[in-house]
Length: 414
Image (tube, rainbow, N blue to C red; front, side, top):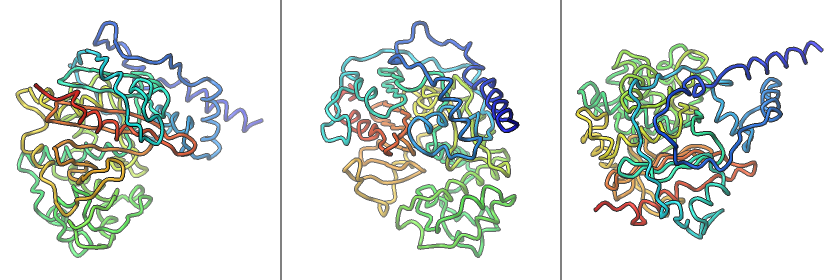
């Protein structure tokens, strides 16, 4: 009886807590929004009870399907976090829906949903939300499995917030990415990191062996802990997915700026892009920022606002956060990191933590479960989406569809 009473109290406390969007739900930027919610009604009380019961009993949220989607949409109830405060002057996004985008026919060779219109695809496949912005205007927006005001976990898309932070400091002459990382951290001398240029860490080609996250998450001297990592090969010769690279870059941002990563993102990125809602960012047991894994939770529109900062429409301000130099450096790829993408079936590179830099200048960052941010500066195009893999571990292919949309001619500038 005592266990049941404790469990009920636990659940009542969780359900009594309001989510971040609900706290700020009085913000209204547009009259009569034109996005589609497809009659989504959210989770039932029984589903919410079942999820928290599993967590309370030691269950794992990473079981795919709706259990995982609940975690993605309710990060603040489960993970220790900090808030990244929104802008005082949210950027208004004009809505100009386009039927030709809504009715765009997806490729017939997709694993699931091939040949459907884009509008039908997001309803029938594992998509939580999708937004497309062209020339600064929303041309498609739909929320089949989330509410527009929900904060949704970004996962490793957060890593490009890390690289953007590095680029901002680089623009100010405070970081030289050609220098080795041990130039900034003496503790990394005589370690596997010694001599590794920051530019190779930015492109996930540090050559460092796998680092155990559990050690980092509890260490009160993360640099000392990272210094124990061994070099597996020379840097800059091969792309190797590694959470250690953005971990170290996050610590570099904090050392050079004198701010926590959370504070830096809030001051230099989040408030400047005109964010409508405050974001969340995970915090480790030792108080360090989870910028390399679970990362940030944002609304879909605010993630798109960040992407917009890389486009001509988003760079019209007197002091844009994305400089000409930064954009140029993203495209100035290390040719050693060239590979043929299994998903895109074309040549891609990695740079500045973007997982796919295309030869035409577009770039993309994807994440576990079907999250993604696709940007085409030349077409003034941003495509952002959230998803959750189903229980068979099948996820959406909006990454492939985003590339098809970009090259379809629908968004070619006059």
